[in-house]
Length: 518
Image (cartoon, rainbow, N blue to C red):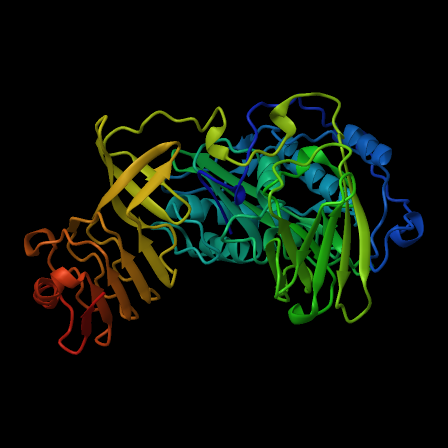
């Protein structure tokens, strides 16, 4: 899943974004696909160990011009979803669907895999149902709970769609599907996704033959889905699928994007060594389990393809047109990998609208004024209610986690959203009620109040770290901790140990629990 808030807009995240809307150029009847290409190993003598189509910079420029889709093509509906009972899925406009498909095929063409992916209406419906359920729950989840009033048939579609799709959330309405794809799924470099870049790998799955898209947008922001689990292209045999690609539009790759190459077979992380060399000045970065000049991961889980090598060089502030980087990878069972990435300007304009941004909060749409009292704001994992907006202090109440099925939760000391810094001073009543998968929680230093039933029936909650020294018996609600694990271990501030021990027992912590101080 991809959560798009202050950073990594789907990019979930995700998180990046653009600010201006480009002219819509897409004409489905005139769409041209370029599929006749030689393989990289024979076309580029510097490349070995990879098997994808090699496209020149001019070929990519021509393809993009004829493909027609741009990053910010508008999100439009032919039938608006009904977000009150009786619910209806709604339907994205044909123009929006075909533009999103064109952008996906554009990305796949650049990477050197099949650009012949087609829309499947059943996949569109599954993605749309998933988006609606997540929007109604106002929580991003691959296993959404059933919204009140939703039919069993619609919910089953939502559940199947969410579990088979790349899903995304943005805190503003109207988020372009194309923007989600480029700045979200193809970035995938926020702290929640960089270790596997799973969204990117599903987009670049060589065996994808069909896909579908869905979105619901309104006061809860924009929830969207891209159906990813299609594997019906039986002729696909590419391996060494890299992003950035050998010839890479600089407009589609930001400095905070991780590099990745999926080998299609299991990779031994302990043996892998990556050397990245910038050719214009000879600067080198080395990546391995023993030494990494930046971020380094190896992931063998199945996200489109297994055996993904992920790295991000430190101290790179920007990739420029005419930059060239040599990638050398050793320690692979099937031989070394070597290829060169040439960055170039693919789009014939100077607008920043096509360039990934590192911070979606800085877009025109998302430069929000300070929210009103009582309004709802969100970060990547949690939902809050604004409780104070004075010039000296801004405060929020922790309302609930965005995903009630998470195993851990942190109520932070402060949050920063859209440039505003808020103290988190309260936990709402029922905030974690019946979160039966919750195992660990940290309560931040600024919490002064915990509402009734806040952790009621969190049966798996075994570890609780209370950092705040500001709680009193009066400000902790009835049954706040009733029904949590009888074997819970609670850490408290040393100076509050005796007082909190009594407080916790009174509000539901069992006598068999272990309470100690930090």
